[in-house]
Image (cartoon, rainbow, N blue to C red; front, top):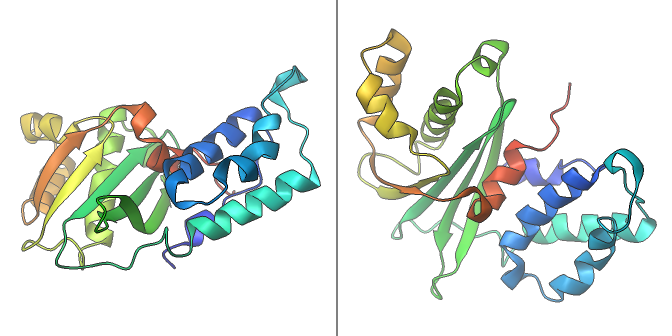
Length: 212
């Protein structure tokens, strides 16, 4: 289910988790009418001084949280894929897992998501270096979305790092990196490095608490 990641987004219990969710919603705020009014109760939880980053979560917060999740998983935000347009693949990796957002630009040049994905890292993957985890996120994405990103379709790959340069320079280090490099060969893509502050949508999903 291409929106399950957002539908299952857990109710925030800390200020950091509220900020993470607002980062995701805020990325698409131009498509959410009355966005500032809807998020007002959520931004209130970030004010004042509470111990250990805990928040005062109210019924109004619950309503706003549910409304934003609904809007993030429906049109006009959720975009039907157009195979005549360029796809935008956004990936992000945390210590625990990876998130993927496949997007396209509409006729007004606004970026909209086509689908959302997440994957929890295995215990082995958690031991990878930061760069290796970023590479693993990209490999997961292109394999999972092969039907969109086949070798005949050029796409933008947006990441907070540029792990593919590292991969190219270190491909002979071990068999795993060799397999990753071979897996990427069929794809026609351009890498765009985007800072974390402009990468809040994918960043939010990879840093959401994972179920046990």
